[in-house]
Each structure stands twice: as C-alpha cells, then as structure tokens.
Image (tube, rainbow, N blue to C red; front, side, top):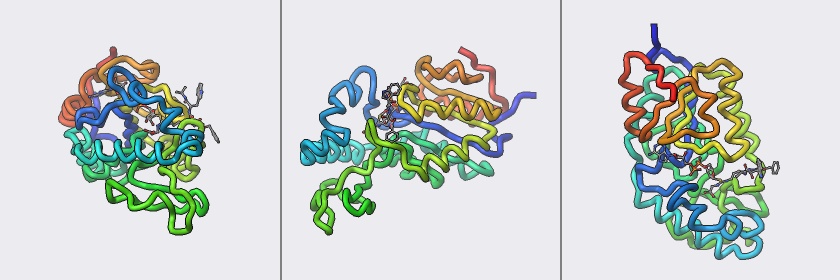
Length: 240
Ligand code: BV8
C-alpha cells in the first residue's frame, strides 16, 4: 500500500533557490542567475569584504531590496502547513531570503545564513537587519559589521550543521526542493538521509547531480509539485 505524506513522522525539507523562484527571487545558476550576473569573488566572499566592505554591503542591500518586494509563494506556504500537521518537520534551507519564516515555518535551519542578519567582525555578535538600508555598517563597538552569510570558503556554523545533521539522520522522509546540488557541504545532505533509510523525494524542474539518490522525482514547479504530493492519497512512483 503506497504512503501519503501524512504517513511520515519525521520529515526534513531541504530547499535551495528554486523554492523561491516563483516568488520572483533570482536563482544562483542558469540564465539570469545571481552568479551569472555577479562574480561572487567580487561581492560575496571574505576577501571581497576585506578589499571593499562598502561594495559588498551595497550588493547585499540591493539583494535585500529585491527580496523585500517578494512574497512567500504557495510552495513556502504548503511547507508551513505540513509543519503544522505533521509530528516533526525541519526545514534545512540554503536560502538566505527568510521566505520560509515569512510563510509561517518555525523550525528553519539557515544553512548559509541570512540576508537579514549582520555579524560584528570583532565581537562575533549578531545584529538583526530589519531595515532595508542599515544606519551604519559598523557595530556600536566600532568594528565592521559583515553580512551573516556563509560565503564560499567560509566554514559552516557548527550549531546549524549539528542540528541539520541530527534531523537528517533521524528523518523518515527527505524532500529535496529546487537545488542544483553542486555546493558542498550542503550537497552531501541528501546522501546522509538515504544512508539512514529515509524515503527520498526530489522536486525540481530538471534532473540534478543528486537525482539518482531519490526514489521519487517530481519534475515541475515546486509549488505545483508540493500541492500534488500533499494532496495525493499515495505518492506515485515518479521516477525520471
Ligand atoms: C566550505 C551564500 C570549507 C548566500 C553561497 C571543489 C569541489 C567540491 C567543493 C569545493 C570545491 N571547491 C571549493 C569547494 C567548496 C565550496 C563549493 O562547494 N563549491 C562548489 C561551487 C564547487 N563550498 C564552500 O566554499 C562552502 N564552505 O566548503 O568551507 C571550510 C571548512 C572549514 C573551515 C573553513 C572553510 C560554503 C558554501 C556556501 C556558499 N554560499 N551563497 C549568498 O551569497 O547568496 S552559494 C549559493 O549556492 C547559495 O548559497 C545557494 O544556496 C547555493 C546552492 O544553490 P541552489 O540553492 O541550489 O541554487 P541554484 O541556482 O544553483 O539552483 C536552483 C535550482 O532550482 C536548479 O536546480 C533549478 O532547476 C531549480 N528551480 C528553478 N526554478 C524552480 C526550480 N525547482 C523547482 N521549482 C522552480 N520553480
């Protein structure tokens, strides 16, 4: 007898930029992607920040302005609904836009940090950025604030990595949504779920390097695929 999503007890939803695409937020790779338009080595890494912190801050304020004009889409909302109905659900997102939380998801692990936080370079203290334009890019201690984002070459936040790994090791359902599966260590998370015997579902417009790890591949826009799966009496074998 096939299972419906409601038969699972400990669910991990692993998302990438594709879950926010229908909200109007550019993905990173492919046509019109963020890294297609901007070289991350000039705008989004520690070396760029040391070289020209103002330039890095202007880039991130421009991205906050883009996100501020966008709303969570049906896909984000269904994930929040699933969390309310299922016994245990953790969102592990690579996104920094905050849209999962805006849609009502509570248990969200931001694997690559957030556009809406800054970190004092000296005290390592976190500052929330509620305004689009920050009053100052300096901490009240005088040191530079830096976006609280995991850039290329940055190590992961130990607490986030630990919580994500724990949830993935214990989950009975792992749904990977809208991620190209090329950035590590995030891209190694689906294998961890598979090793621990989780049912694996991938939602993406296209095949990815991780697709072979998934027993069910739903090909189409995340919001529609999530709606179909959430409403299905049983998950169909949607192998590619
Ligand atoms: C680290 C921050 C070490 C946010 C980002 C060689 C081999 C292997 C690894 C490496 C290597 N060389 C270097 C590395 C390490 C490197 C890495 O993995 N590089 C890759 C590119 C080869 N990783 C790192 O540097 C990491 N740190 O390793 O540190 C260390 C250890 C200890 C101590 C010190 C150091 C840090 C990685 C984090 C980088 N941060 N961004 C920001 O600035 O915006 S990267 C960026 O890619 C984003 O974070 C993003 O989350 C991430 C993944 O992208 P996706 O979310 O998957 O988005 P993408 O556009 O790629 O794909 C979108 C998908 O959605 C597509 O598949 C598309 O088909 C689909 N889609 C589109 N629309 C829809 C849809 N699906 C459904 N519905 C739709 N409507």
